[in-house]
Length: 265
Ligand code: ZN
Ligand code: FE
Image 1 (tube, rainbow, N blue to C red):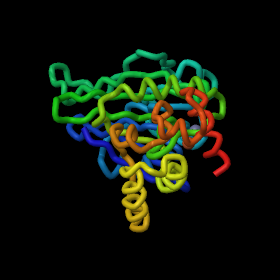
Image 2 (image 1 turned 180 degrees about the vertical axis):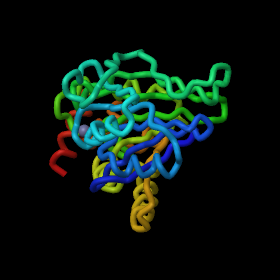
Image 3 (image 1 turned 120 degrees about the vertical axis):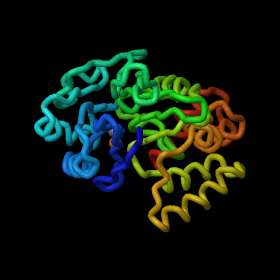
């Protein structure tokens, strides 16, 4: 199985999980249909699943046209998003499993995704986590607008406490988990991050590296959870340096203050 990153709109990424042997694909958060249809044609695969993380237009905008092109496609989303995701057929809650591919007896081609309920950006947001199928393969996390490389999604419908709860869940995944977040916001995020965590050496170096990558228009997604835990201020509400920089010793308050500063940045 292969994951293809499709850049669309100003800064969105659509992800296509492709099984070339079964000739099927699943798409995560199709903002638009046309670039997905073009990639499916190029790969000569059939779309069997749409995995939506939340209802925002830049994550579901392509649903209707994709359903029209592939009438048998299954459309997944969070149970709390009922009525907000075009064509939704499956209403997922925390701990549910989704399957992509079906090759009984062959674990490599049978990817089982675990659903994590991660409200905060919206009240219904979910993530899809595909654990490793072999020990030397990373897990894959599709977390929409929750963790970004170097940042996190705005709190449109959720509270800081909810977001800290959601981040706590995601933070427990293995450090080598690849994070496929839905936007290329990394450089802006790191420019902010350094203002609240200025003495973090790894963050300083990451800002240098990402500045160079973006100058060459190299994508910075996926990122790795381990890197985020060490350099993303929105996963570091319990680190002394971060708490000191926003003058709090409370986890949720620290998170809320960092988020508040980012909103003004
Ligand atoms: Zn969103
Ligand atoms: Fe978005």
